[in-house]
Image: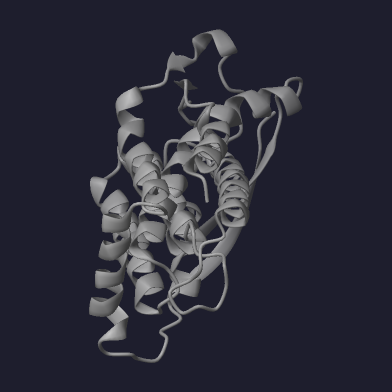
Length: 260
């Protein structure tokens, strides 16, 4: 597949990476409520340094499609992980991919407050999933790379890995001020998901690397887009109802909060 076509798809997907904004959460009686984001004029320029890693990951995956040395590395890693000692599939990756994103929302139930309230976190997570799903689907259809097990021509990039790293980046960004270990745990789960995709002989190493880059990039784009979309759809709505899950003494509760 011509790399120009693939790079065009990626550029179309990642073109919004010019500016970024994160808005602090406001609370009433220690429970978060939904508030409007700042105006477009208050947006801060995007920090290009934060995009270096995901861009490099995506570029590596694209280059590996026609780069013989990188293809050789893919084969060597496959031999080390699977071909030399074939084993039954371990399907934990089908569930582990969602763990970092679920952790972002679950922490609210344990009264661990992130940078945004739970409704905004959910909105950012959903938007990130829309972006990564569109990107992964487009690249799979245009690249048509065969999977290591020969089961289908949909190997590049790894959607499981993209999902996991999108959640991990959201977990890091939301709870970095609370503790950096939340981000470490999220990225560990994401890395484990990527490894399991190779362990199960479903993806090449370059597929996993590109998937990680797409996942991280999708969350960064979601952080940039979400304030604008929220102001468009909720511009005249200052009062909102928030449902906050909580856990105390072995009991799971739902707390209904209305900001008047």
